Image (cartoon, rainbow, N blue to C red; front, top):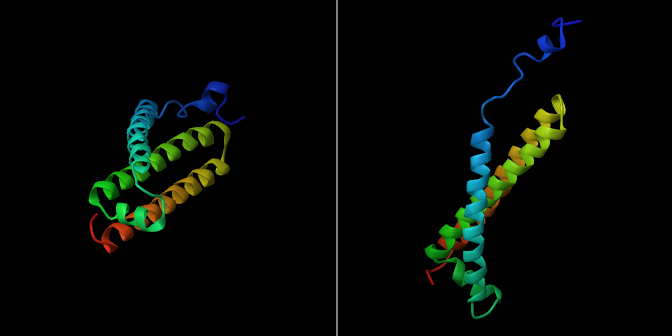
Length: 128
């Protein structure tokens, strides 16, 4: 039996002392999601129409593009932190590492695509 006792096998696998930091970041992103989503809902509701031209013209404003990019960063960070907890709680061994890597690649790639789309619209048109 490797390690001798049950205690010997688990030595070194204690707290990584990252739990409070992770918890705090998850709460901060939840708060920023709330504020930015409220802004988004109010801003969308105030649009005169919901056709492509109106929304496109609205998105060309820096006052819209910046909060939208912040919303994307906040939502995807919150998403990654939440799924990281689930993966760490229920996956073990190599599956955990692979799942965490896939999660990180997925969130970075999709957030990058969303931010690129926002910036493309913001820089391609004239400010509203």
